[in-house]
Image (tube, rainbow, N blue to C red):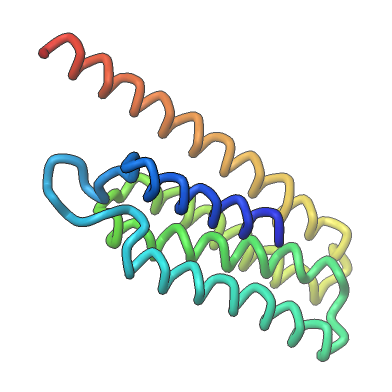
Amino acid sequence: MRCAVAMRTLAVKRARSTGAEPDAAPGEGGGTMFGKGYVVIVVAEVVLLFGGIAVLGALDRPQETNVAWIALVVGVHFVALGPVWKNRSIMLPGAVLTVLGLAGLAVTSTSALPWVPFFGGVLSGVTLLAGSLSAARYAQAAQAARAASG
């Protein structure tokens, strides 16, 4: 988790320092991707992640519960970023992650506890990969369309 926070921080700093920070909504002048809304959501995400894991530990919940909690918080993070970035496409993977996290949390109280890493980890990873590939494909198609029209 610390590595992800460090990578995100470095990416934001580099984007701002090089002037490569993209608009939140290309062509609409909606601000920057890494503006105040983004910062508020990321800070809330970090607080919920670490605070939630601490609470789960204090409640003596099984370690597998942490995986489900992370999936839930990351999912909500993407759903919240959709309106801020004026990009609804990230809300679908966010909703799927949220559901997977909730399913994982529900399963932690049953005899199916060993399946929680599958819901919260494996399926969440597949969801993030599919969402990333879809976004890359869309961005590549949009770039090709701009190049062809310009």
